[in-house]
Length: 143
Image 1 (cartoon, rainbow, N blue to C red):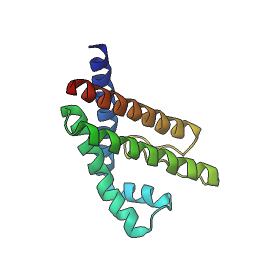
Image 2: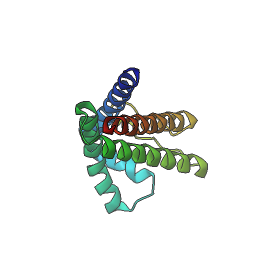
Image 3: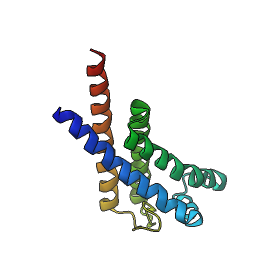
Image 4: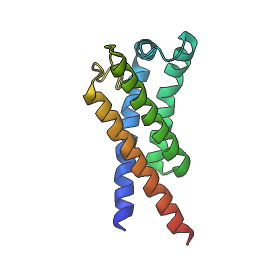
């Protein structure tokens, strides 16, 4: 029973973070496009596509977590998303460039630093824990 509460708290935490981030990016999509473009990982059209799709992906994942839908798939996609965010920020920091992380759009943004990478890695670890609890719970349900 205790693990079910832990799983619920983890899902809600991830859902809130994803919903806030997705909503904030939708409030100023041109600013978010500029943030994505600053990373210089994608070309202009790839950055445009990512800036249009990522906020909706974040909101869809948040809805999945809030409603406990598509648990395995949403857990894995969430892990991948936070891993990519962490690696992108680490790449920028290691290259010596100084750009805004673009993490929460109009709500909050700061220059990429060990703090922002630590936050992204902490969310990745929480997402991994969510995967673990999701798969563990589903395997127990099969018994």
